[in-house]
Image (cartoon, rainbow, N blue to C red; front, top):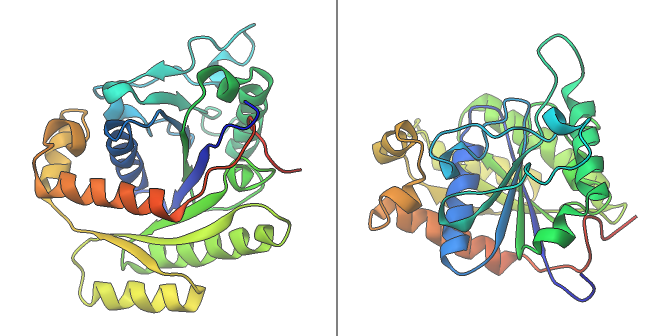
Length: 261
């Protein structure tokens, strides 16, 4: 992997805000651009990659933790996107954050990045609580650039503020930097202004506004991304432009799973 440049992008956001839909669609769009993409779901629900796998759930890294190899934990999904899910403990039986830490340690020990040689890694991360485990993608060089998905709803903007604090604190240690906010529109009153005001307070740009469109739910019902199922739709063009914007705003870094200590 020496000398290879890999874009390492973390997509954070409050649960239910649509970050997994955003992540899967930009992964699909980047793959159609000719990039090799690895999407890693970092949410105990383990549903980040469903739209890239015709709606099916992957066996998670934690499910295979006690096995000798994770050969089957990375699956090639639709449009060639490589898919993996960290997973988490059964509800009430353990800490989801610690589960992510264990999954990342296994990904590194098995040299997954070296084995699959992606051009882009997208970490799809739950951002309701930025504890040590859920902050793992922005620590120790796993991700280089962080984008926050938010709407104009109060709780999603509150989560965006907390995520920004964590990222900026860790940036001082040489870790990931905050690239901006992706607005996943809910069509609430004065939404653009609310998101703009929050971005100004955080000190970042709104890098893209994804409009609300019923075709997203239609495609999700089929277990597919809009980019794959409705490639000529206006919504697919929005996801493609968002993917292009992210590529323009990020720079590849060298190395395997970690590039900084």
